[in-house]
Each structure stands twice: as structure tokens, then as C-alpha cells.
Length: 245
Image 1 (cartoon, rainbow, N blue to C red):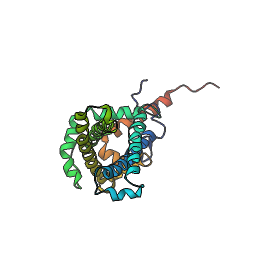
Image 2 (image 1 turned 135 degrees about the horizontal axis):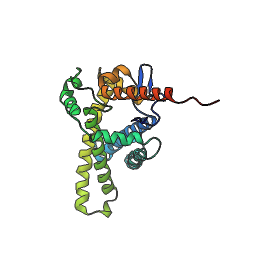
Image 3 (image 1 turned 120 degrees about the vertical axis):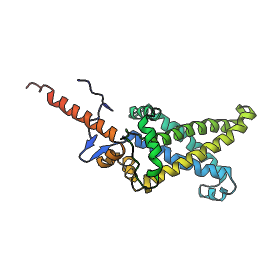
Image 4 (image 1 turned 135 degrees about the vertical axis):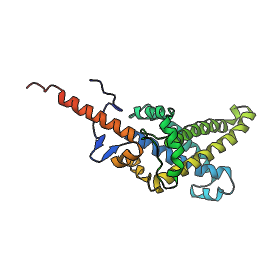
């Protein structure tokens, strides 16, 4: 019997009583490395960019030290997260990309109802999959922002190796990408930490699990699929011939 499982090891701890494992260890590591390095980049980048923020750089030892920290954090920001697509449990990261670049009618309906949910209500829309329309948009902003920040950062870092015109363009591209990602992060933090309806999702990025109640309300299609796969797996175990003594 062929099972269309989200992961080859889905039965082990995937659904535990009233909780559902939403994010694997690899996904959580990737998320937190990305988040921490982004804030370090934002803080040190502001100090390098503007004299207004430069006094704050004394926290790390001055502007010159901030520049070094900025470049080291940039490497972590790109390399470590990129490696998670190839080491550990990379299938979750590739599956995330597949979800993000596949907008469905349900996702668009979620996006159209999202303003109501953002301001404290609960929009009416079809049961989303593991990632809803709003999360996919946030992911796209993160992906595109990361790409443009990385490419423009490389040009700025090795300016002597690129045409002057390209270097001049790299600075506004870098700044605009940072502003775009910062705005997305602020909205993301509000929803994850303060929003009365969606802050329950935060536990998924701490121990990996969210409540089945939350999963049913926000990711019903995904939960239905996991329950069906779990049931199919359990039945397959029951039907397996017992080992001979």
C-alpha cells in the first residue's frame, strides 16, 4: 500500500493527543538562525548607514566593529539557512518552497479575508493547507528580500570588482529590501506574539507543536491530510503479517 506521506517518518510523534507537530527541528533552527541574524544585520546596518544610530554602536565596540559583525552575520544569514536545504531534514524546506510558489484559490480567499483577521477578527475562508495565503506572501517577501539583500550586499562588499553604476544601484536596492523585510517582520511579530487569534502559532516555533484546535481553525486541509495519513499508516501496521517465532 503506497502512502502519500508528508515525511517518511510521519507516524512518529506527528500527532500526539491534542497536539500536532507543525515544524520540524530543522525548520525551527532555520527560522531562528534567520531571525536572529536578521536583527543583528538590521541593528549593525543602521549604525553603518546613519549617523543617527552610530552612538548605539558603542554597544558592540564602535562602527568599525559593527561593520565586521554585519559581514559575519551576513554570511550566517545566507550560508547557514541555505545549508538547511541540504542537511538535517531538508525535505521540509523544499516542501515549504513548493507551497510558497503555489497559490491556490483558497489562498487568495484567505488574503482577501486577512485584513479582518489582522485587526482581531477571524476571516471566513476555506480551510488552508500547512501554509495559508498570508504566510505564503510573508515567505515570498522573505525570499525575495533575502535574494536582493544578498546580491546587493555582495556588490557593495566587493565594490572594486563591479562597475561603478552597478555599485550605485546596489545601495538603494539594499536599503529598500531591508525596509521591505523589516515591515514584514513587524507584521509577523505582531501576529505571532500579540494577535489574540494567531499567537497560538508561536508554540510551533518553540517545541514544534500547535494545538489541534488551532490547526483545525487555521490549517484545516493540512490537519485532515495528516490525520488520514496517520490512519492509513496505523492500518498498514495492523495489516502487516506478524513475525514468525
